Image 1 (cartoon, one colour):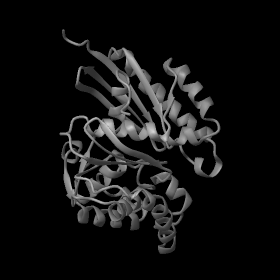
Image 2 (cartoon, helix red, strand yellow):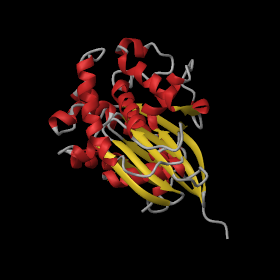
Image 3 (cartoon, one colour):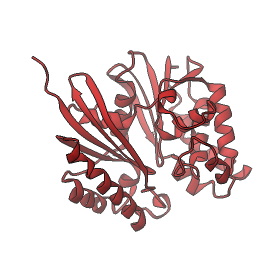
Image 4 (cartoon, helix red, strand yellow):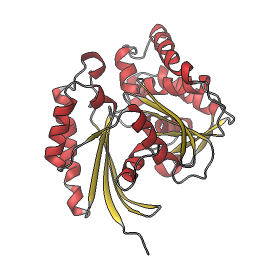
Length: 310
């Protein structure tokens, strides 16, 4: 008997961006129809104030309303809205969820760090051959580091380091000073080093906008091209060089890069620094990273029809 098809709208509401995926799920098959992203910087100043700023909430709700208009046009049957680091860290996160529910008619799911890590792994590896893999997702407020093979998770953590969080806390000058970068690196290392105790992995998968932008820079692309980036395999040395260059650039110079989304230009240095430290500190049996455009957003879509990996 053929399994029924379900058309899903999945929302990933992060610290820097909100994204929408509309897709069909049928058995083990996912067919994408629409992917949209808006940079809204919901996590603006959350690290400092502990609250979502009114103007950041306004930007995010406006984007949500825009996305909501697409849902009936494409015949969506099920909606899953997940919020991550910024909302779970903010004391007014519940009020934000109330407002989203008023727009979409569904209650947002605020993922804790472990659930965020599981959804990231599910989205990144579901379509890959089973192999013991490390999946890294560097977001605006947190970084997920997950290890597993096939449907079995070995470990997964969410670290409170992200491109927006580090930029606001440490990288205040443009471009950042050597002292700022040294202080930032020491802090990042203090969080990454304690988790670098697992056996070396066979495959390293990097996902989400920070990493795919670093990949675009390493490949010297004339424009952001998902088709080229998805599945690209880069050496660690290529990535280290790209991270170093992006971290040291001024915001104006980053904005001139043809692949750079303008909403990432001011914070990509912090994210690139995290990736560089991951390359230095975590154990690998591979000298390459596979870039993937499949990530937590795809995992959220699968959550509409099955529980996250345990």
